[in-house]
Amino acid sequence: MLLELKRFHIPPGQRILLKDVSWDEFEQILEALGEHRASKIAYHYHTLEIMTPLPEHESNKETISDLIKILLEELDIEFYPLGSTTFKNKLMQQGIEPDNCFYIENEAKVRGKDRLDLTIDPPPDLALEIDVTSRTHRKIYAVLGVPELWRFKKGELQVNILENGNYREVEYSPHFPDLPLKKIIPKYVKQVKTIGRNKAIKAFRKWIDEQLKS
Image (cartoon, rainbow, N blue to C red; front, side, top):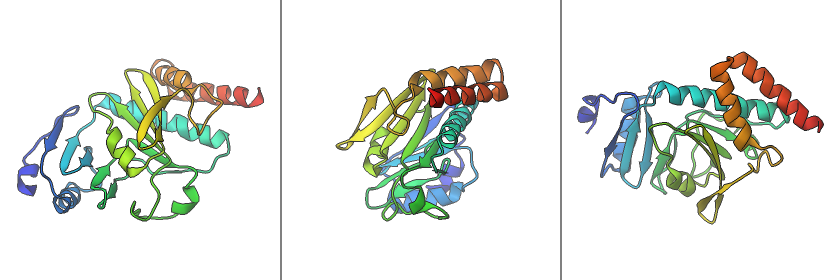
């Protein structure tokens, strides 16, 4: 399978699905692909998806990640961002690479760790997925127990919380309960593309400051 995989060329915005992939094969494929790669993976009960994102995907990922970090910084909430770290659990037969993820409540439990094992360590408290041509693997995140999942698609932000093993869409993030982020995040994503990143980021910080004062 590894030899066949090396022959695949996955253009940006495209994906391939591999069926009947054992856990050992999945581990071997991850090792062969390496950590420094453009593609993302998702593994769900012996089905492996490999996707290569488009520039639009990466741009939105970076912008929204920056906005989340600014929110946490301005609110003086300690956090540990882990980007597109591969999260996997052999016992659950699941693996996923979020566009970004954040340890917030559980930050102290993983602080300074170079390797995470979800059979021992908690999952991220917040995961971000950008859907341009890909799809958000809600079932994988649910099985791994990620409490909050953000999905950005077609200029809209969806906030989901995990309840009884399934995600439910809500209006306000439990991490930022007093802020209308479903409206605000898309606004500043657009501003980055019109007035530039620095001006948009400054405007976002000013907005947060106004919210805190009020």
